[in-house]
Structure formats: structure tokens, C-alpha cells
Length: 292
Image (cartoon, rainbow, N blue to C red):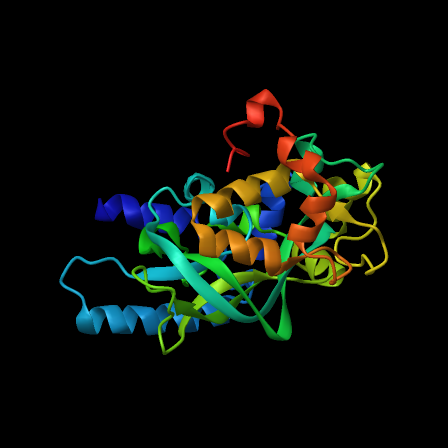
């Protein structure tokens, strides 16, 4: 098993140029002296810290982990396990200082045929820093074998969350036996709002054109508050069902602490105006993927 893990880690040591090459069908380079995507220094520091703590306190053979905070489709454990099949301790927490917003289109919605460009029902969720805001999120750990050698999340996670900045963030554990949270914050990673420039720098102009441009989308993150951008109906229903499945606290937060692109209309208000969204069924081949 250790030999297999080492091989997996070596294969997953893809720098930014190599990963972009894979996406475009070119031969990747496995040189390790080129900067890796998503701020690998940040993850390396977090990884070293978690490893040191685990080494000091864990029994021999325990796996070091990285904590991930989910706010959209990752509210669903079933969905989370499509990327992290060996995730551990799926639970709830509170993310302070961030606002959850439907503010950008996701290329995967176009690829899967569930985006509606005519009505602008094509936006996905992100979180953005906002003083005084907070939302309930899911919290789970990813085993060491799912990460790259420097502590960066696995390639599947990078591909799934390609348009985001993945950053460390504080969170509070939710007491499972009461509505109270832990008095001291802990640290996880979360997918934060990014910029078009960062995406292009990370993945290249050609990938931007392939992922968005060919669908008539010329910006990921440049949608104004009065743009009329609306949530992708299939995705919103999926997130609603996932939040509902995590209990009343999670659902209330999803309805009250999640906003449309105008940063004024809550998801609860939007669904009251458009109850048909919750009746929107995904295509049969996506029923499992977008079933909450």
C-alpha cells in the first residue's frame, strides 16, 4: 500500500503547466521546480502544520488530513464523495466573515446542458469576504493520500474548482448535540471568489475560450449586481436538497445567508418568487449527480 501511495503521489505532482497541458491534450512535464497552482506555499504551510500536530498526537499509522469547507454542491456528502471517496467526518460548521453568493457562471453547467443563457439561469455559488457575514457550511477531512506531496488538494479537486481561489479560512465546529459552536476557531480551506485575470494566468487564454468563450460567455467574475444573473435551476435545487438533508440549521442558513448577484435578494426570497425551481428535474443521466 505504501508503494502504491508513493506512486500515486508522484503521478499527482503536476505543476500548473503540466495540468494545463493535460487539459489541452499535450504531453505534460513532470518537472517539480515550476510553481504549482493555487498558492502551493499556503497549502504546504498548512500541511506541514497539520502533519506536525498529527505526528505529536496521533497513534502510529494515522493519516494526516486537510479540512475542507463546503458551501454549495459540497453540502451533499454524496456529491463530495465523487471527488473525495475517502473523506472523513462529514459534519457542519460556521464560516464567519464570508457571504455566499450566486455570482458567476460555471462552465460545467454549459457542458452538461443545464445552463440557460437566454434567462441567465446559469450561475453557481462562491463565497466572498464580507464583514459581519457568516454561513453554515459542511466540514470534512481529506486523507493524506488524496493530496499532492506539498499538501495541495488532489487534482480532482483542482479540476472541480478550477475558477476559484482556494484559500485557508477560519471556521467554528457545530456542536452536534446543541445549536452552539465551538468557542475557538479552527482552520480549513474554502473556494473563494476569484478574478478572470487569475483564471487566465492559471489556465491560459485558450482554456478560457474553450470553457466559456465558445458558449458566448466573456467573463466569469465580471457580472455586475444589476446584470440579472440568476442561479442555474438544476444546481440550486441540488444545493437546496443537500442543505435540507443536513438539517434545519443548514437549510435556514442556505435560505437566509445565500444571495443572488444583486447581494440583496436571498435564496429564500428568490424561491418564494420562483417556486418552479424546486420542480426542475435534471436530465436523467444527471439525476444522481444533482439529486441533493
